[in-house]
Image 1 (cartoon, one colour):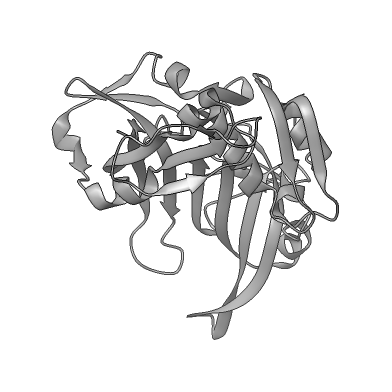
Image 2 (cartoon, one colour; image 1 turned 180 degrees about the horizontal axis):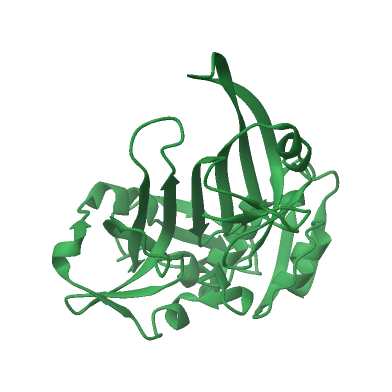
Length: 296
């Protein structure tokens, strides 16, 4: 995995120890965890705030950098390594608590991200009736809830960052995989606990909005209409996992067809182990596959 640095050079196989490039359907959809051998040049280029560029052209920014002495010894010296965590460039402000409250009406996710300090442009956006993030909150949590209210997810596509509704996400052209390639997950308790009923209070202050259609738990959500309450009940539930040799197609948001069943990649993790500290090299992909689940 060749990562481009600020000076245009790349981290070669001789310096890269391990890397996990992960994509998710979350407010900060791309992360990189990396360990490299420390030398004077990399110590200067791999500090907090420095940019990185992935082979897919996704710009990242380092948010954590720590030099650690490894257990391995070479030429009589203990090997020092730099442990790096990087996220999609422009999303760094979303990782810390807010210093002021943000309240927006008749807005969009582009406006929400800008109001929270993020410097990213969402290519495919949708409208929001309102958005609230209180002072001292972690911004990613109210953003995730706003996405759930619209039955949508944040996806890093080839065209850029996009907000895509779940129905549109499941309507694309899928990649075909044989059922022997996946491990199915059957956990009804996780579904019952994760997919709950929501109720709200009507504008008159007395009538209850929403219906309870199952024996699942109930949660109150303020100032929500029936459409938003229905969307809150529609979530992605993990149904299967797939582990295979490196397959860079399996990024979050990709549609998969397994024996006629349509699933979407909820999380895709590409793992690179160079074997620089001993052991064999590994290039593998693990993906968690999900389907839309409605509270019934």
